Length: 110
Image (cartoon, rainbow, N blue to C red):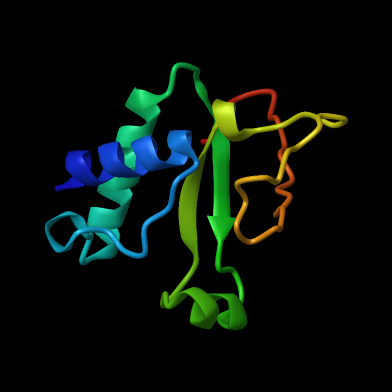
């Protein structure tokens, strides 16, 4: 399930296409299954992992996306932009950019 869902999302993402919902047999039913889908993206990426993000850090944010607590997500290098980069919003249906703040640490966190 996880690999199939990741492949479908990756194809849609790169084609600038959207679907209303994942097919039933590909839809994660638990947080662990969702993270398993996400873990496949690192292998599909042609570049090293850029970093991680934490989403839904407030109760309002959690209610908005239907989760019970904060969730972690990979930031892929292909989807990261540098200061001054020009972004094209043509295929962005929400017409919104959500900036993330990235920090680089001098050594791995223990």
